[in-house]
Amino acid sequence: MGRGKIEIKKIENATNRQVTYSKRRNGLFKKAQELTVLCDAKVSLIMFSSTGKFHEFLSPNISTKGFFDLYQKTTGIDLWNSHYERMEENYRRLKEINKKLRREIRQRMGGDLNELNIKELQALEAKMDSSLLAIRERKYHVIKTQTDKHKKKVRNLEERHANLVMDLAKLDGQDGIVETGGYYESTMGLLPNAASNLYALRLYQNQQPPLVLHDGTNDLRLA
Image (cartoon, rainbow, N blue to C red):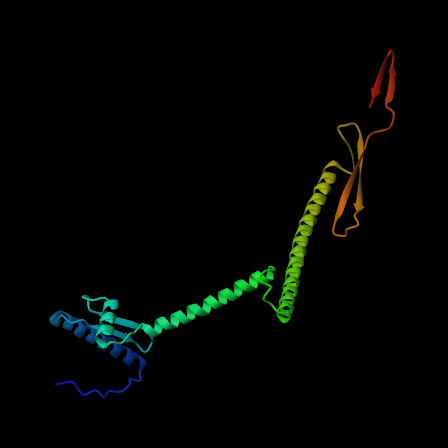
């Protein structure tokens, strides 16, 4: 039985459409390969699927650039002229923008002011004032951030110091004898800063006179 005649119209089912595209694409590439081998032809096929996928076949005996150069030579059509003109126009536009930006930078640094009229000078002054205001606001923000950061570090150190003092007081007791012969009295002081409650230690040397015991001719002094 022969194949039935297929009506040439868009396949609505996406899956069937993709399958048909893949089969016929492979068939075209196979025919192009046969033309290249059998007839020594230069064949180029460029295909885009409905999903945007790119597929290409190019005879192995020619490069893509060589194929387009041959096309231009044969047809007399310059494919790159309009593209080159657009590139040149874009280059000139970017060059002019760069020149303008450089001039504005020099003017903001106090140069190239002789060609400016009064309105342009006033506009430049307004821009400078606006820029200066933004710079100052940023500077104050940075200063505040750094100050808050250092204050937080100081509070952490004060808390650590307070904890160490409290641990020392717990170990030595309320009133303890020190090796130097004096005694200390632990007191708790509340600092003006409400965030810091530190224990202050005041060390006193024993100012009482030594106790003297008479034992015959020898005096015993107890410190």
